[in-house]
Figure 1 (spheres, rainbow, N blue to C red):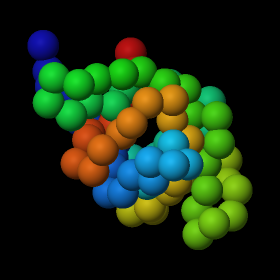
Figure 2 (cartoon, rainbow, N blue to C red):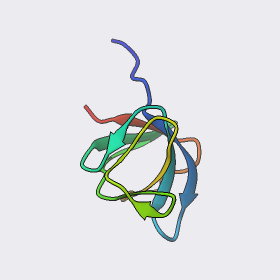
Figure 3 (cartoon, rainbow, N blue to C red):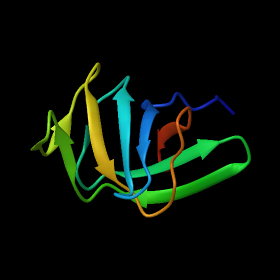
Figure 4 (spheres, rainbow, N blue to C red):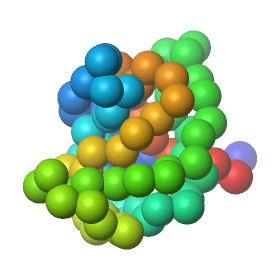
Length: 84
């Protein structure tokens, strides 16, 4: 089974806001279901909102650092995959 390529990596976690900043390797859009994984810790979530440079956007592209609200902690270094 081929190893999934992460679509991005969490570069910052805002604990009080429940917001992860993800540096994207591939495009990501609102409505996408993602899997956040760091070591044995893993959860799946749906992207419901996204910001780029503090402005709401519907999608992010490779190279963007986007902020997304998630339901569980997504610490720095966590890898983000498209949920299958």
